Length: 262
Ligand SMILES: Nc1ncnc2c1ncn2[C@@H]1O[C@H](COP(=O)(O)OP(=O)(O)OP(=O)(O)O)[C@@H](O)[C@H]1O
Ligand SMILES: [Mg+2]
Image (tube, rainbow, N blue to C red; front, side):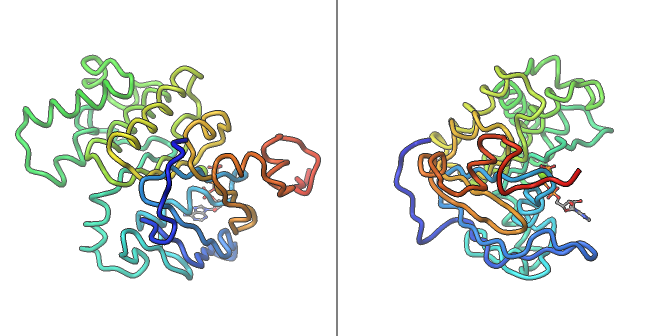
């Protein structure tokens, strides 16, 4: 948490009245959320509540049933493919499963966005790839030659992160970047998220179930419940929220308004 002032009036990303229905299931009912420029926002919520669905809408991988998603003023729900391509140039996305192309080694996977969007010499590409792999705590030389299925889950996650940040995007969406990682590697990733925010002014959206890591880096936290954001506050205010749903979630108790069916 940086304790900085953010421009709440002109957020870099703004979600308005987002509804998403899959078949007959209304996963997102009416999501309204802002992401101020240069901030880190953590989205919290139960498993299956629709967190990944929200960030897939921000990159235009999913189209809403209803509602708008503005990224830097462009409505990704309705814009053209060309505009979407421009928007995506500025967004790094770490998928929840660290999705990689299985037929490419890690070097080529991480280099992929760079080769897609820029004309760089092989030498420059190599320099950037090795830098990014090292930054995420991987043994770059060794890992670059390996294929995704030769990596552990945690290593794959870090390689996915290297790929997400290689373009030095203005916006980074992290879908559970530390799940399945040991506490030390988790902290390394969290510190990296903070570093990117401070040094490059990145605006981050972070989905995580790791409360300790959340409170280390979040400027704002949002709680998604039954298709709506029922709490949004800055770090300190969220921690002290009097919302009974948030309190129960933070305490991890089975007793409270959130009830599970057996
Ligand atoms: N492409 C899809 N087609 C149909 N249903 C989907 C699709 N994507 C997501 N869903 C459904 O939407 C709901 C929310 O899924 P989502 O992955 O967004 O949840 P989540 O909050 O990210 O959960 P987790 O914490 O487990 O990752 C789930 O019930 C899921 O089955
Ligand atoms: Mg998810």
